[in-house]
Length: 330
Length: 230
Picture (cartoon, rainbow over the protein chains, first blue to last red):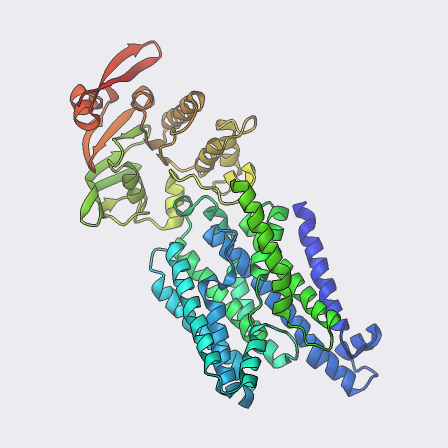
């Protein structure tokens, strides 16, 4: 079972990536699309532009953001030894969102394209500094969770305040729509801004497999097996912050992927966190790519938001999870 | 050289010392039973010795780098948590002591035939292949056969020239199998030596408030607590 999971996931992600490149309102043929992407192409500049400046960044961001969400979710669940943990738990998503919302509200985002993602990244950086300051030196999980909850609440209040004070309904609507999360109309500039952070963050998170495996037996046993818990926590917090901060900066807050994907894949990889990490990265990428394609297919002219769709699929799954847990506990 | 040496080890919870200036050296070939009533400081002593708990005084283990410490001492904690449903083979392999040590640990705990959660956890600690094993209440909650088997494994380890320190609540089990007993009372070490000397009528009355009965049988020394005296 475990042996076929990875090849299948890789095939699935590759297939969805190409599907994402081929599906869109422009209705390009396969040959035409590939020619425009890789070579000169016959369809003229418009087709080349559609492929390279609209569909390619969208597919690449879907891949990267999905991988970041899945991987960070698996790492967070492994570190906290809790199947209900998700990447937003340490407050990075909410503070990044607050940064973005402030950029929208102040008009910075309208004046300068990259102001929004940069403000979101700044929010993520600030939250990490605060989290590390609050969470104490000994590498425990509880203070980390509490600090994350407090920061999320604070950032949520900040976002509400911005909405509350917004000068007109249009400004508020713009903020609300941004917060739903989307990959539409992103450019290669967004890719170049987010990709380095996401890559670095994911690389850091992928090194934590051995420590997370040992943590299966609890903090004392893990430490006695040579795991430096304080260092492990630092890598998890920084890796999650880089990957998730950058994801929120370019795609908005896309919920439930980091929670649901590790869950779906855990039984398929024998529950070991070190195997779940790469599997979840692939699974997250597949889920985001699929959901993003679905937004284009279901309602092409209504600009259906990615975050809405993932939550619509994710929340019922979450309820099912609680239902199953309830039955096991009873 | 000692496998572990503690000097004046002290652990405080607030102002109150839960481990109070304990000196202890454990040599190769010893199976040390750590005794004491609830709250005597057994768990805190083991965790502080490993460096898992802030402490005063010195422990030869707590200053080691985590990776070096993992090769020097294995630990079976009291909280027996297994967060994810991993396989027995994966669980034992977590110890990273090498394939040979893993196979030996699995054979020693009889996991090829019959697998219990506790036996698997102990096999994981054994697979670390460290010269010293610290175990917190390894016999608690086990059936009699598993208790005796666990004690036998510890004795075998000691006979092979390793060291074992285990906190044990069952005085009979400790008297029967340990080569040496250390008695803790309110964080202080009040007795240290041969089982029969440590479980003297005075110590039993002072620390546990019970009296008991020693006997030599063909299976070795036997101790049975008999009644409460206060």
